Amino acid sequence: MLGTAALALTYQGSAGAAEIKLKMAHWLPPVHHMTNTAGAWIKSVEAASGGTIKITLDKNALAKPPGQYDLAKNGVRDLSWSVGAYTPGRAPLFRFAEVPFASPNAKIGSAGHNKWYVKHGFDKKEMLGTVLITSWVHGPGMLHSKKEVRRIEDMKGIKIRVGGGGVLTAKSLGAVPVVQSATQSHESLQRGTTEAAFFPWEAVHGFRLAGLVKYHLMVPGGLYTTPFALNMNRKKWDGLPAAARKALMDAGGANGAALIGALWDKADQVGHQDAIKAGNKVQTLSPAEQKRWAKAVRVITDNWIAKGNKMGLDGKAIMDELVKMMKAG
Image (cartoon, rainbow, N blue to C red; front, side):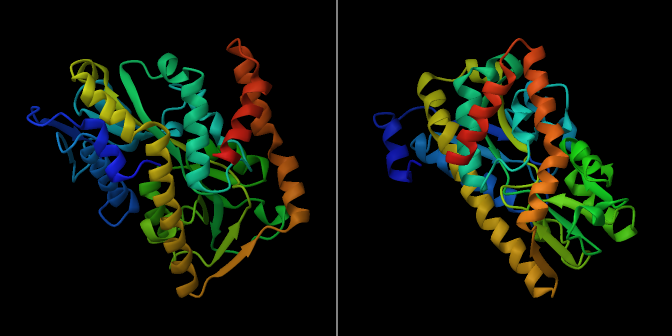
C-alpha cells in the first residue's frame, strides 16, 4: 500500500493547479467505522493529488442503501459507495465474492477481489455510467444470535437478518432468511423480528448489537462475503484532468482496497471486544461442523459458477482464480 509521501509524488509539479471539489455520498451513522474509513480514504486522495482534490462526505443519506449506486450513476453525487448484494441484477460478476470460506480477513480479501475484478475488465462491462474507483470486502462473515448455535441442527428455523447475498446461505443451513439492509438490524433484533444476524465482527459495534445477542459463532474464512464498490459518475470522471484521474486511481484500485480492508479489520477487533465486554459467549465453528456446513452451502459456489457459464465464461476457472486471489491478497 502506498504511503502518504509516496502518493504525494504522483502530483509533483502540480503546484498552482486548480482545486477540484467533489461530493461523496454516505449513508451510515457517524458511529459506524465506515464513516471514519471514508474519511481516511478521502485523505489519501488529497495526499495523492498534492492537496488539489477536495472531497466532501455527506453527513446524511440522500437515498436508501439500494439506491446509493444510482446517486453516482445519475450525477446526484460525484462519488458513492454501495453494496453489491443490495441490487442483485446489476453486477453479477462483482458478486462472485459472496461465496463461503474465501476470505481470511478484509485486507487480504479486498485486495484479491479488486485485482481479480479489474484484471478481467468486468467493471467496464457491469458498472455502466460510472467508473469503479476501488472495491473491498468485509471481514469473515459470522453468526450473531440470541440462542446458542454450535451444530447445523441448531440453525433450523432461526430467523436470521441477511443482506441480499445471504439468503441461500441461511436456507441451506435450515434457517429462515429475513432480508434487510444493515441499518435495520438493530431495530429488527430489538423487536424480535429476527433472532440472529449474519455480519462480520464490526457490526457488533457499528450497529450496537452486543446487548441484543448473546452468542457469536466465528467461521474461519467467513460463512459468506459481501463486496462493496466505490464508483464515480462517468461524465464527471471524463471531465477531470488526467493528473486528477491518476491521483484517484493511485488512491483507489488495489491500494484503496487494502487501505479500506485494513481499517475494516481494525473495526472487527473493536466489535469483538464489545462482545467480550458484554459478557457474550464467543465460539468458533468446530472442524467437524465446518465440513458439514461447507457441504450444505456448496450450492452457493455452484450457483455462481453456473451463472458464469451462462454468461459465456468458464465459471469454474474464474471462481477458482477468484478464491485463490482472495486468499492471497
